[in-house]
Length: 296
Image 1 (cartoon, one colour):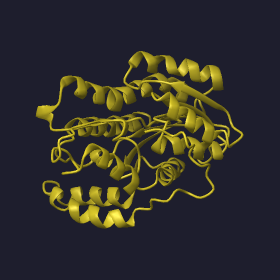
Image 2 (cartoon, one colour):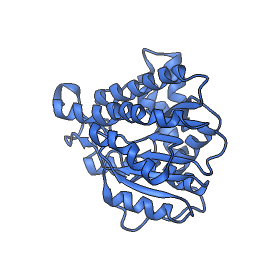
Image 3 (tube, helix red, strand yellow):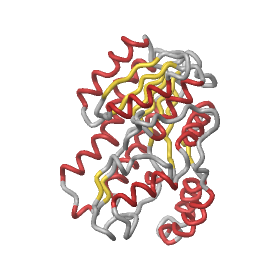
């Protein structure tokens, strides 16, 4: 798919981060966008940014952990836009704690949004994608769908699952008009931690001694700007890349786990420290400003 003009894209997790900037860049390219998020306030902020461009727009408040809400989504999008050409299953959350300390409710919450929601969304939108002359299904995994660390067992389970599901589906749909892509971001400056459930005991999470607020601020402010990540995703769709790695940290981590699959964790600090300095934290130029009402 070389051109997004006139296409209709459904984007989950569109209230912030990569989802927000996928919507903005697609609208700038002439695509119609159906914005989906559980947070009505941040969804409205994204819609304000998208209205900068003369394109079709609809907003849908959807909990991607609720299978009934997902099942009702295609009819709402078709009613508004008449077609669906691209689906970006981008919404994601995490619970940062050890498996032994995690409640079953927290486990199910992450599983339903990150994995079951992706599968359900793919299932309900696939018939509409198959009706189009060309279409794309883009599922967000993570570099944590390639490597594993302590304290992220449920996140790894979902992201490895998204990777396996997407790669299998790509083989099943080979030769059809539907492209299937799996996205593996490294550290992107998003609100995923602000929207997630974290163990607030210092030393009990991925970020060591940081408090919850410090973790949220660090993750959001020290990663690649999500507008740059969104551009990489769209370039990957144009180039029909099945795996789309975002950031040098993601590419290096993938390489390291291939070279030393049992001991790559020892090398991760050597990768992360220089990458922290090299990440491009600035937004792309000539994009609308984020509304002042933006919330976490």
